Length: 379
Ligand code: PLP
Image (tube, rainbow, N blue to C red):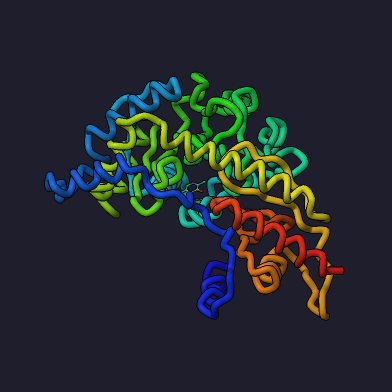
């Protein structure tokens, strides 16, 4: 979609891109200053595989102060983005044939990472009716003797759903009964949460030792290109990930790590300002999408995405062109409305599309109006 969108833009067409998975804000000034200083101070050498000690200590402090979670220095591994932390953990934990439970919709790379580890993905379907969240009963029913891992994100990409502390408690109670299952808790959207304080499944002592927290700087600090993420886990898993990473990429960029340290050593003001902006846009787009006939949309509590169900339009047509599925609908919206979105199939749900609101308000208003107009042509 991004490629097709670029092609249309190159032809001079005004394409509004709502397919992005990154904040449209700039990296905060103090973070950029920390990076400039690092260059001047010659932070130009290979870094320790698990990250600079100062950064790992700052992450330990952050987890304690912001999340009330106790980790030691050796339990933190800094990586080239949260994506590498996720891949490290999956590679280290999953043996061929073992099952990994993933609630759908899920972030695209989860299933591919599991495939690379030769694991079997077991999906649990969540739908718009239950805010795209699974229940403890669904989880229990998906567990088999082969289950090794459970993998999810909250706040979630692509749905923006946020599990509350109570909802996580009910899932944690299931894991308590199954001591051989590990849990990857992807918390990369932690700070883009419009409900209350971020809740982590690692807060439950009975299972904390089996939880691998994944987090990073891409979303909260608008640093997607800087490539800094991390994981926090028990010491054994952290050591295994350090070993794997040491043979693949080594430590991530020295300058980016110093910038990340600058981020964690300052107040959350810029993070909160960005979150407030996203909340305004969420409310705006929600109001507009609710007025579009034939789509079913819920109010997401976090991240910067809507994941509306669009299946009512399947089978409809315009000028002989039939829309059979979400992918064809996305293509139609790109060609007809000049709005780029992402098909839900990429996230394990073929009835929905993902709309990112990481764009300026006037663009968002224009985009939803164009979508509405294009959909109205289908009958
Ligand atoms: N996890 C989720 C749910 C994401 O949406 C993304 C990026 O889009 C990542 C992880 C990867 O983040 P990073 O840029 O830190 O690799």
